[in-house]
Length: 175
Image 1 (cartoon, helix red, strand yellow):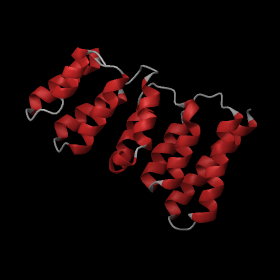
Image 2 (spheres, rainbow, N blue to C red; image 1 turned 45 degrees about the horizontal axis):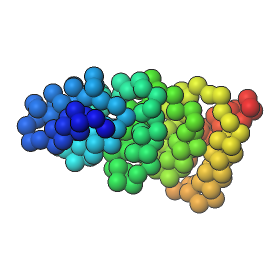
Image 3 (cartoon, rainbow, N blue to C red; image 1 turned 90 degrees about the vertical axis):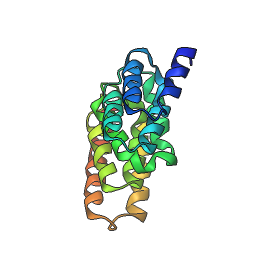
């Protein structure tokens, strides 16, 4: 992380809302994947709708492929569980290809809430592929475990996971 980016990241946690918003705008031009986690931490801790709206806008506009790994690490982190649905929403809105992380989205859909499963379904439905056999096999293991342990607890999530299973089956056939 360059000294300029380090300074901007520290400015994210100022008390002045206008300064924080200005910093987020500056990060859109000067930032890299290293600013994703601090932005998500701010989103988690912050109460300002204006700031949070700017963070969502920033994350939704991500276009640098190096950001995919960082976004996946953030959504895997239990620390961000209460904002995971919002973060997943920015992922399907961005122009990034999360194809290599198919199994991660299936796992979140199986472990998370209905709304998280819905966001994962949207992401999975928009993945470009091609998919590797290991990804579809790992996804099928998550789906099998869901059927054995979670099925019947939430009918809406059951339907969403079922829809995901159909997509995974189609992906597997195309390999």
